[in-house]
Image (cartoon, rainbow, N blue to C red):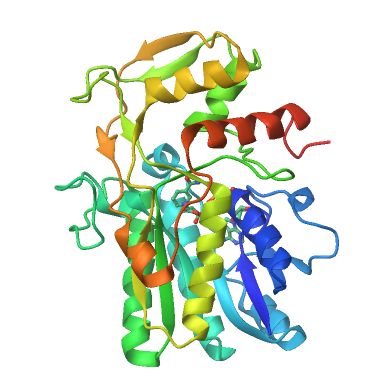
Amino acid sequence: MAILVTGGAGYIGSVTVERLRANGAQVVVLDDLGRGHHAALDRDVPFYEGRTGDRALLKRIAAEHKIDACVHFAALAFVGESVAEPARYFENNVEQGVALMSALLEAGVRRVVFSSTCATYGEPKQVPIPETCPQWPVNPYGWSKLFLERLLDSYDHAYGLKFVALRYFNAAGATATRGEFHEPETHLVPNVLSAALGEKSQLSVFGDKYPTPDGTAIRDYVHVADLADAHILALGYLRKGGGSQFINLGTGDGYSVLEVIECARKVTGAPIPIRIEPPRPGDPPKLVADAKKAATVLGWKPAVSDLPSIIRSQWEWRQKHPRGYSK
Ligand SMILES: NC(=O)c1ccc[n+]([C@@H]2O[C@H](COP(=O)([O-])OP(=O)(O)OC[C@H]3O[C@@H](n4cnc5c(N)ncnc54)[C@H](O)[C@@H]3O)[C@@H](O)[C@H]2O)c1
């Protein structure tokens, strides 16, 4: 049986494909390459270029492969862009996602692992954030993900579709062969390393008056390889008949923006000059997971998510691939 990975040519998707295959799984990738890179996949990975909402294509994939589960990464995922272009986000993440789920049901696929996000919590009332924390996103990106969570829950009740919705905190880091490369890049770690490489003269730090020890925002960083392994565990859990779950993927520890920069200075030896800018609207001071449920339900424990390992791995990858996946 094969696993359909949507968005498998993207950052987290391509690392998950790498690790699923290393684990002996058969994988089929569907990606429209809007934000992904075909070069992030090994040449022998069955690949379909197209959108998740293309029902005819989904039918063809199901006819050509025995799909028994889907890992659904494909989405647009830039918060600021979603505020400026909400229609694009709801079309891509919600409409396309709804069509994908219908096509999966038609094809008899009833196991889904879904990439959700801590952005569904909005500005949380409680930190560390447990899965039971009320969800009220503060941007269209977060709403688009929460909509899919609600859809999956309804489809479980009505159609018996079983899912694990993994609410990632901040993915970062690289494996020996795959790392983070977005254009434009909005994530802190790759941007810090671009500054270390001298590609930016100064790194923008958004806000230094937050109610945190050094005034900058605190986030929970998870190594992409650990994230990928959680998907393998979630698929195993569903194949053993496990019920649907919403699960945080974080470490339970947070680092401030300045702590990340300081760690990157140590790893790279570069000075990384910074410039303080106003805080971005809707950027909460602290987002850290209560990570207990992932351990109890999936047996997941992050193995390489300490900050130096995350930064060192992405630094090594970036030095080998200064222009990412472009030739
Ligand atoms: N990176 C993070 O820190 C983070 C945190 C929380 C949640 N997530 C979620 O994890 C998933 C993967 O994130 P990423 O950082 O790897 O993003 P990414 O942009 O690198 O990967 C997404 C992939 O999906 C593809 N895609 C997008 N819309 C598509 C569509 N309609 N049809 C087919 N392919 C489509 C893109 O081309 C890209 O290859 C996303 O769903 C994102 O919302 C990421």
